[in-house]
Length: 151
Image (tube, rainbow, N blue to C red; front, side, top):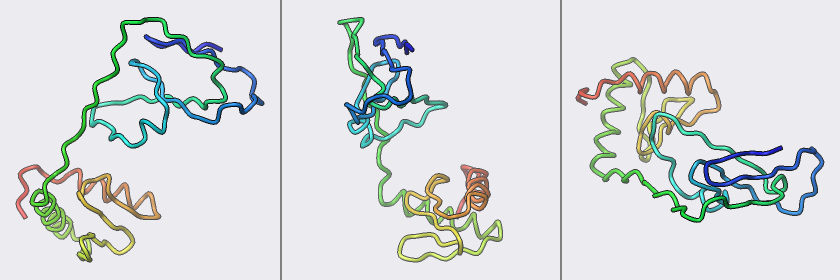
């Protein structure tokens, strides 16, 4: 089986019971192939869409570089919000959740909703709960908060 990319071609083992001579995972995208442990510490970009293909290392027989004029992709990082921005966001989220009649308590920097918690920086993807239905409902409420909402 062949996996074609703009800059690399990977020949993958077709059989399921492949020898496990390489336990690494590789991250393949249009700009090249990267070891997963090198990518795991970087932040994922906020874009409209993002496609990632994970290929277990044991499934790769060889990697052949087709072009020598390759440049590594530029890393774009999302700037960390300041302490003031995080505090404002927390107050805004608490006020919005209270306006939507949800029981909200703040406990040691964590917004507590009973069966769910929201951690800093208090966005729709920082919701922690064991129930995915509750998580999606809280995400919808937070995502529907207007940008001009005042706490």
